[in-house]
Length: 279
Length: 315
Image (cartoon, rainbow over all chains, first blue to last red; front, side):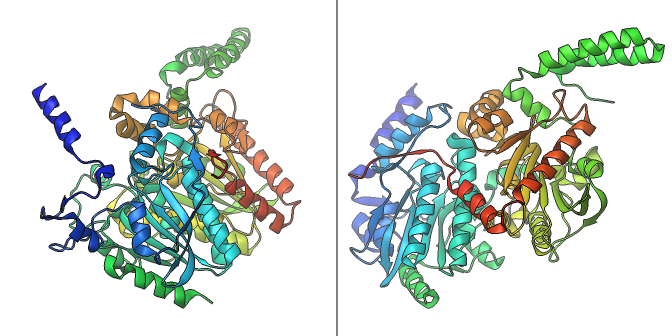
């Protein structure tokens, strides 16, 4: 009981994202405690150990797009519960909690913007919304972004941060892998660029569909990327995994992605690549 | 020795009686038992729970891809490898004929018996398996051959080498290419349709399921462990995920349910094989009445329409 109470207290005292800007922030990697404002100015990269902290979709958009250029689309799409799915909680309740936490109705924000002056369609995943999982709304937003890109003759940038397909939508979510990949094939035939940016973490149904289909695939340092989670692999093969397995650096070494790009140069790199690939 | 699941026990008893009657050459008794069998089959199989259907989908006597290939193809040749790393025995590819129809058949192959199970990696492909499948469908496209893809896997292999060689990319690439492949494609879930590893050969003009097959975003075991945090909740998870052919047809996520014999493909391989063969030939001839551009447009429209959500009017 005492332990339980203590746990509750700790939970209560943890500041919610609504309390932001918090005054102090601790780096999860090197445990350094820093002034929030200072870290925010450095794009949430730890000045001591260079750890790229997880950021939410709104912060990502601010960091990646030209100031004032982002115009959101499809914010009116909301998840429903096609299977009346209930595990330990109902899907409806999980959605409600995520809506309360993020103030939005899906795990992606999508819209039109310019990056380094180049017009593009942008889709950004928010890990805070049900682990950035891919459901019907997320899939639909991606397809609509691709369709807008084809109409406007511009490229697409998708920033992934996701545990994979959303189990509560079962096969509906599985099929979003096919739906989004098919849409990107259309973009490809139109000879328009697609840049896939992988941020921590990118797994499962997201990595096994659009995230790995970029003309150029960029990951942030330290991002963990894979098909199966490390725990499942360890259980399956019954052995320890090598150091750095499934890290962004590991994927570059194995020829699976193009580059690891520091957050401070990410925007200029994406802008320049879009410029090179535009007609 | 045939293997019986616990809910199949009544069937086992009657089938043993039929065999005894055959030995005794007692045609009268045999006829009576056969009638009885039909009744019990009807009773047993018309009201299966989702979990029982999952057990049937994984039944050890269920025909695997190669069993079907042997039953429905003739003058065929197995083709191997993706030309880069190695041949993956968990996926098999053939060129040959089904009746008069030249075609390419691709299947995920589980093994029977310990040695074969290991050789086939329990039907869990590596990236090179998916890349071999891609090579095979590209050949089919080049020579305008229809493709039959037989899905039967617990999932893509979660291993060290699989990750190093890009399991995600291999699956993604297949979804991408198959969505736009310029030939007729038919996918049939014959047993277990495990997640992305199944979908990697499941994007087609027609996606059908055998009566007792399942298709799911995650294994019910995995789902129980993650969402319920309780591995014993497998039956609950199986039901919640809606993975049976009937469920998925009702949700309009698959095109057709193939008329597998009520007693199950594991008890009547020939009729099960005929059902697949007839479905394939019928759908190919129906699809090929359309031009390739029409077929591709339909395939894409179908994919694009999948998903259920609410769209509020813009504020």
